Length: 505
Image 1 (cartoon, rainbow, N blue to C red):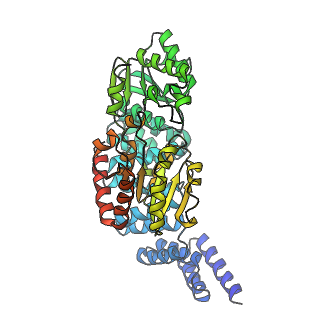
Image 2: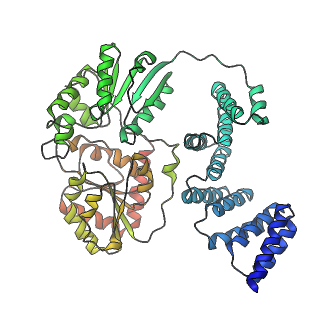
Image 3: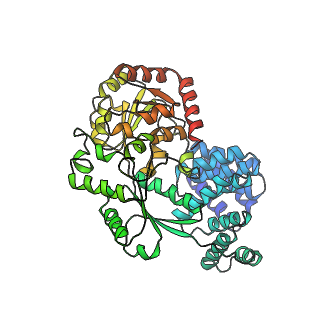
């Protein structure tokens, strides 16, 4: 009987709400709540009614009760954010919007609300970054385009503002605010001539991330950088300069360089490792190293002919000076506008120690396997998370199931989300000539997330100098991990030091 009465009360409330009779809807929802207490949908409905009746305090309490019953609901978290924002509690609002997008990464309304909050507080970089990310992911998002156009207008970039307002009107001709904005904009400012630069990187690779930053930097230098995943012969007529990331790993890039040489077009190369000196014991020796003589010879040739070569470590720059005419040290950087770096750490009770890598780095991790096994056996509240290489994970299956976890890694874009789950980052490297030329990319990423690390003593890491502990031998690894395991304060202190260094990049 109670169920029938409850359903009738809810149906009556829904009919009243459809007619915007919020008082009547609330009345029947309150009766439904008395009939069957603790129904999340009833609390959400009551919260909506209170909001429409201009009773935000009561609305907030209703949605808080709904959140207790539906902790995985992105919509409930969004409504909490909205109510916190209405009450002036912007910090709580931002946290609620962040929870909403963590639960549903495509909750565009929550993303837009976050962006508006940042813009309201004149945190332009974060707000504009979120809006740009929304538009990249969902090109039909009109509200985000309009908000971004307003940002450009405020920054007196009238050409960009005009393009976005026109894009809004193309999709929604009745958008009166966009039409009014176009009418008030000054006449278009003539653009200065730009050098057009074609940039090439394989999709999903760290090189793609690095080249995205290069394209952005070029645009700020009166050049136009366009990022491509594949070279096309048509680009020779369209672009003035060319940049190739890791060309020896992509056959079309090597063909592109040869086409540039024939057309007498200048090109630069960005390369992240000393592939000319990979040792025979390394798994990449026969793939990209001296074990592939034809590829190694081709790489040496395109390095020699390049107008310049950029590298992410000083040690690599020193080595390549004998192979290229102009070698530039260009350290790793990061995009502060990327909302993925602001994802809060998921709640967990165990100490989570993580490693990220592929089959190429597998032997480096396995070189400290016994040290890790000793650590986890003596710390049953610690969990090993391995991201990327399933085979490496399989070498630790003798650990109890609750002490190990595997995370797939499809591209570099997954790294911020994976790192968010770590309390300590492992960065082991065998001391060979190839690894000694690596960059500080991993420590930069740990610093962004304020994660302490334990790492091998390669030059880039000892130069970085803060945020973690260096481990030179087996005893060092075990000691460093034990130190961090027993001291949350030390982890926090090192994480803050790493973040301070990351902010300088």
